[in-house]
Image (cartoon, rainbow, N blue to C red):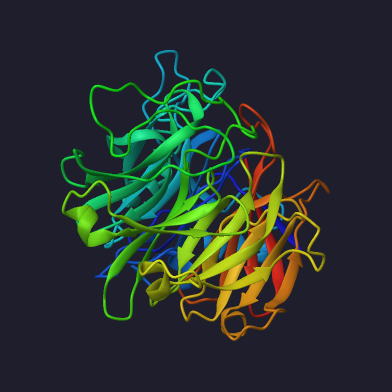
Length: 470
């Protein structure tokens, strides 16, 4: 294992291979995998602007640290940089500073534009100071940054790359899908509470206006739910008497949507898939109906093992991979990936979950907490970090689809250079399929003063290299 301490590099660039990776530095919540609409866009891992690896850069962002980091993949892989601070090109602020100069922001997810010129950063609770905002339920926001400026070392630790802010239309924004003219967002929370989220919002990329809202149905737990209309009818207040934090036995009424992915049926139909941490299932949303303004475009609900968090689709869109992370009702984590068939899910078929793969352990009783899966561009491998077991699973997708129970073909342990737990959370794959990029950070509230890490796994050699930053 090689360790690279990364700081500010003195080299700039104009064109680059951009790979986006959500990195939860010191965070305990999860985010959904970034997805983009397939017409001329990238999906999940990144957007190719220049395929030369020496011009490959990783854009990472992590909650509790309000920055977008630009990391040179070439520098990070160079053995000469072992123990140095040479792999970070620049850090860009994701919100304007507070009046006293303290940086603001709560970046939980990001996605690059089709041309790679812009990146959309989802601030989970908006432009907040994590040392002051000690709870959930903040108003979400989208920060739009210019990639070329973000890659310029002269702009390090400034807002020079920040172009604009847009309101997310909800609270606790997480999952994101980028369409041709629209940003689609999952809003996992309600006002000042971790529970109460049921809205998927559609924000105009050009104007920042709220175009549509899809309202997800409430769950059917073994207790009474608040009187809350779906769809919402005025006059009616927000959900009341909800638990501020999870885990709490009162969860289960509201879906609290986390990750978001875009799947496609074999006849060309498009469906959004929402990983619902509150109700422990996956919502299936007819995209055409949603874009026509139908607030009840949810057509099916697929149960999975336990509260799902990360979610992504295969390159052809025909399968959706769901990481069964953890329950919001009790302190219990999952240990499986659910693989959904999009055609079956779009019909609400009871057999839409066509495979369930144990990851991170050989013992079904061990809680591994898989978080954010990624799929290689050829659709062969699924890579998922497991938070509680400090390892990364590599799953053979074809084996899983064939019914093979041992579809996890490799398990790679991770450890920080100081011997502490890696707590891997986010993931992305380079567009050539060579490297898996895994984020990790300490568990700390309200913010982390410890360095986060980016683990770079060579999927051919199964070798790990580590990037560390403050």
